[in-house]
Image (cartoon, rainbow, N blue to C red):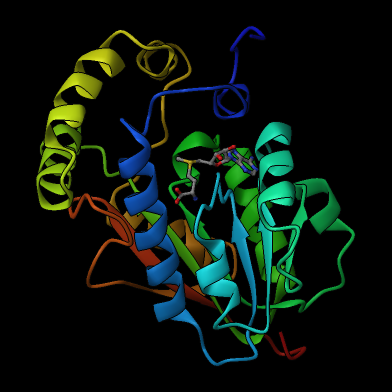
Length: 239
Ligand SMILES: C[S@@+](CC[C@H](N)C(=O)[O-])C[C@H]1O[C@@H](n2cnc3c(N)ncnc32)[C@H](O)[C@@H]1O
């Protein structure tokens, strides 16, 4: 295993964030279902940015025109490419490859549980890139943003509730103990994790040229985290 010095290396290596296969399966099914709920129509061109293993991306592809899965972790991309090789409207791209795509290439861009792993400069750079990639009228969903007052206890209770509802409570209790001594905890204390209040994140989106609204419900299981839906502001030049 390579040394883990940054978040992308963490996600590129085996980890135990999902406490068992059922947790990963339920999580990615819920993510796919949520993305389907955001689709503007059956021909939508969708980008799932920082998609992780996206185990059920085929459910999104079945309801959309096309789906690009993008993640910075090379091994994650290898898994995705082999998992979805037989799905003709799914493509896998690195963030660098996305920069070579034409403007206005997507009707919906989703980044769930990604911005907490970015420093402010990277976040601003990605918001500019997503704005370039969004077609006029397209939607950006930035989800699972962590407010400063939402800490480990909130995450723990949300996970246990989710596990209880989905039949993996015992595995979650074991997993929680394992995570407490895992590289994830160590990285969280050394690299930190980005947190934003609701007004701060609105201001960041506004500065990046988006008008935004907070979604009534976070995209994933911790209701204390925030999800935003944003559209590029119209400019005098048209965009
Ligand atoms: C917590 S996982 C979220 C995965 C997925 N979006 C989900 O909802 O389950 C964070 C993912 O973001 C990816 N990631 C982190 N920094 C990134 C960056 N700068 N560019 C692209 N992907 C990134 C990681 O490799 C990891 O797969």
